[in-house]
Image (cartoon, rainbow, N blue to C red; front, top):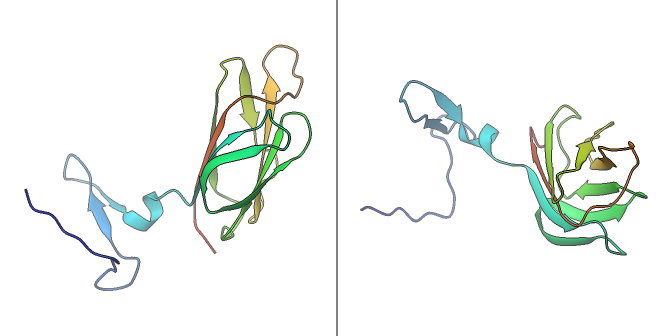
Length: 131
């Protein structure tokens, strides 16, 4: 098996023009577009909330019961990006009402009763364009 070791990859025609061919060989995806621009693993039900590990997150703030606010190290280009959250309990679901280019707020509500409450584990990732 061959191994390639590099410190930086740049496209030949432009810096971000690197494409990856899909499994079936018929589709190509931009490598830059396919990368997560932010991710975090945190424990919201502690005081203060704790980041276990993260990428492109400067801070985690407790916005109240069931609310975790992630501040980006590098801002997003616009507020039209995809945020995905998974929670350590099956009876809760996340809602992201107003994304901004600098902060992602995740509100966690219990499925029964629609009350906001903290969870023991929260995993978040963001895909989109950095500024």
